[in-house]
Image 1 (cartoon, rainbow, N blue to C red):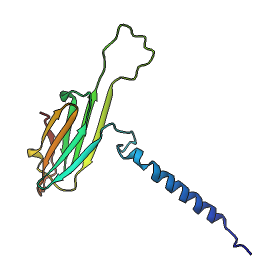
Image 2 (image 1 turned 120 degrees about the horizontal axis):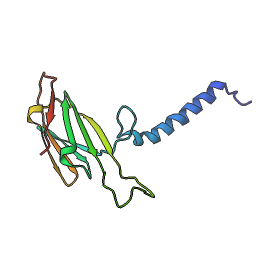
Image 3 (image 1 turned 180 degrees about the vertical axis):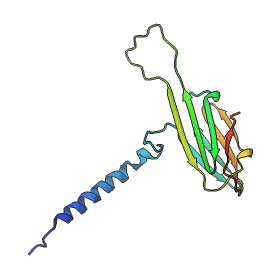
Length: 146
């Protein structure tokens, strides 16, 4: 005689399938903020002994349109890219190049010295250097892009 299945077995099977599907989709949400809106900012974070180095891709963005802030252990990268140029006529067959804003936050595993942070931007690549240190301050600090 076959063991009799309960309705709960069906639920368990369904939850296992859903968990697997959510696990398969998790890579789609790796670069999203808390609103679930995907961010176009890909970042690498390197731990280099006495500092963290964050490298972010921001193609097509002007240096002046990048805003960096650090609060406690969270680096926030925000950038705006606008394409206002017209090409002969306002009647487009397809228009995908528009105003775009991106935002990415990176939580760092250790405290840093915000006053000594530096940033550079070259050929669409932003590099932020954040010296490590143990501090008690939680003040926000703005980082200028050179």
